[in-house]
Length: 423
Image (tube, rainbow, N blue to C red):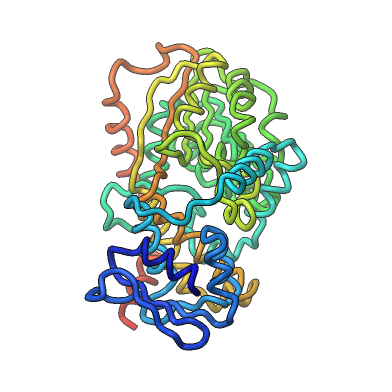
């Protein structure tokens, strides 16, 4: 415990963290007048496992039940406390230069996503069972940032507003052909068809997503206009008036950014518009942390704006508009975490307690990255001809507001939330 004790004394200044070692010895860090978040180690080697590599060890110790968070707090409270202190400049442990070099090398190699590897990486994450995602996503199964015009809005309302914002930036007209790269469970494609009468081709490498998206299109009676295919975007052929990519570019890896923008440029009509919605870094190019690469998003990488804009410039694009969306994903992740935790029994029955705890740790860590760390979302509108866009951005807000007013948020989760609060 001596090594972890030394680290935590230097790190925790705001709030209070209490640690109970396996032998019952108690340690306190930070503001002793604050409400303590208490963690307990259940075996002799757990504290050392965390101290040797905190960014990986803490998640593994929690997943394996070697680190327990004492009620009334939970892992989210611990992550927000510790990482909040780290993000205020106090820092976690500084890896040795040799370890940093190895981490950088392996992170870069992990981002080389040739077709077979890209497919297996997507299946690793997105082919968890459909009932699993239904337990914490909104009813349309939007697994990307929601757009909280008011932080008090429900997740359902915020996801509708996200789709309205994306549609507004695409400037759609009936009969247009739209390519949706990384189409998820089909919600955005069906939304665009419903409101604008466009033809949509959605592509993904997740078999269950494609199966379910086509089922939804069939049930809606629009299977002739909205189609979903299990294919790599690099194998798509044809010409499209609009291209949208929501939460997909994070999976292709930095070595493939130029390839991605070259391919989409070739697929888009000369007067077309592409909208890229992605998580982004605020502090320049970096690497994906080892725990996330190992357990959640193998092959994934969160891009810096400079990397994306450079790739656009090198492949014939003009950037028409960029919007930075700052805290929206933090609110989204907090709600996903709340719903995940409410369904602990169901998730444990579907998989096991270890996966449930892994998912909690992932969501909590991601939330703090958007709440106080270096992550935001970018909307990049790219065009071949600058005349494809109006002179000002006024059209975006006006059209998004019009679309938002057309749809009422589903009531199912509202009623469920009210029932939970009355218990």
